[in-house]
Image 1 (cartoon, rainbow, N blue to C red):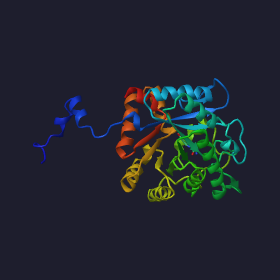
Image 2 (cartoon, helix red, strand yellow; image 1 turned 45 degrees about the vertical axis):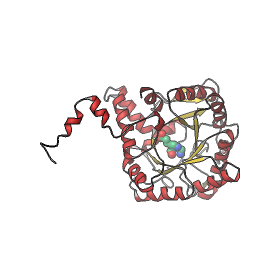
Image 3 (cartoon, rainbow, N blue to C red; image 1 turned 45 degrees about the horizontal axis):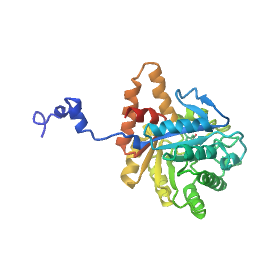
Image 4 (cartoon, protein in one colour; image 1 turned 90 degrees about the horizontal axis):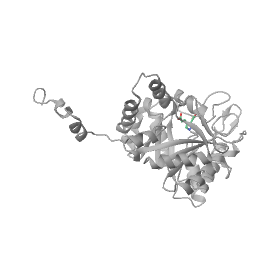
Length: 322
Ligand code: PBG
């Protein structure tokens, strides 16, 4: 029935009516808050390109984790900035590394919080690439062993979920069998499945001190124009045992969140990355956008596209508002 019988404005007349027919809801349950752990004690080291975000030492991370939990956010994801870097990134599997100590501290102080760890080599290697280098490129199969070691070390420290973000072929399967072999078959894997070689990671590389020292990540991260290939990445990760699949970044790839959810019907995460955060913060600071409304619109749209979970640096403040 068309106009004048049908008038869609009838149910938009006031906030109560709008609330009653709202199709998509954002809940704190959907959010995962990223944190950067750095060496030292009492350290709060602000990240210039991410106003409101700081690198935190283990003691400070535990305090922040408690605040995030108190706001109602169920989970955090940890990134480590190690004391020293080397060619293989060996600090990644140091059982006394920053991330491992942070996990133990958080598990003791905030036991109800789900602890996810990012599993990648780029924060730990002196060349800044996501794996072992052979010639001028990352050696895929040699890197699988390093990633498995890092994942195992995180899980031994108490991590609930590991999240490989390196984009090597076969890493979900390699990590799955390493975990199962050591008796950790109950630990879930959240795979960064469709992770694109994106300009939006710029601020993160400052936060994690992980910018590649030569070349770029285009030989392992996905080419932004490719949608079909993203679906193949997701299919492979699921076959290898991924429990949650991720699309990253979120906003420029809403179409893929939608396609992944509709094709596979599995838990889907989307990463609202550092550049997406920085854009909104910068416009907010300048008074060019209403920050609060922009954040809610963006995160709700990522949910509407089909994401069950959103990794976002806005998680704590949004959960408080909800
Ligand atoms: C590590 C990793 C990156 C991000 C998450 N894990 C950076 C990269 O791939 O260069 C980006 C997160 C963000 O931009 O917020 N490989």
